[in-house]
Length: 112
Length: 110
Image 1 (cartoon, rainbow over the protein chains, first blue to last red):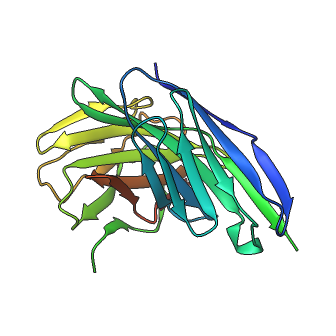
Image 2 (image 1 turned 180 degrees about the vertical axis):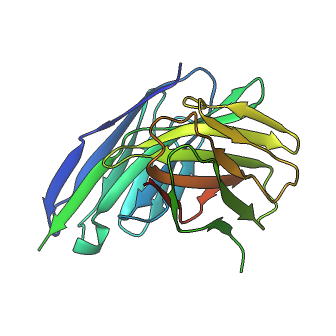
C-alpha cells in the first residue's frame, strides 16, 4: 500500500526565515511526485512534478527536490502570503490506471 | 477559459438521499480523480479513471459511485450508504506532467 508522510504537521516561521518541508514516501514504481499549495476552502493549486531522484524544480521562493525515499520543499525568505497548507502526492501505475495518493499536508504560517 | 469546473459549490442533502456532484474538464486530460477532504485532514482518494468507460476504486470507495461516459465528465454520486457524507469533495484531472483541481463542492447532510 502506498504511504505518504509529511512533516512537520504545522510550521510557524517569521518572515524571511527559510525552512524546509518534508514528504517521505513508500511506493513501488513511483511515476511522479507532485507538490500543491492549498488555501482554506479552495482546491489545491499545482506547484511542481518531480520524476527522478536528483531532480530539482524552482518557482519564486519555492524549490522542490527529490530523492529515492523523500522530497523536500524548500522555502527561501518566506512572506506572509506563502501561508497555506502544502500537500505532496505520489503517482503510481496500477492495473487500472495511475493512482495519485496524497499525504496529510504541512500547514505553514508565516508571520511578520 | 480552460480548467476544471465543479458544481455546485455548496450542496445540502437530507439523510437517506442520493446526490450527484458534477466535474467537467476542458483540458483534454485522460485521467480524472475524486477525493474527499475532512477538516484539518489531507485528501483521500474515492475513485479514479484513466479512460472513458473505465474506473477504479480508491481507498474509500464504499458508499460512492461514479461514471465516465465522456472524456470531459466524471460525476460522483454520494449514496445513502455513505455513513458520513458531510465533507469537502475535490475533483482533479491529470495529463502530461501536471494535475489540476477544481474548486470543490462542500456537501452538508442536514
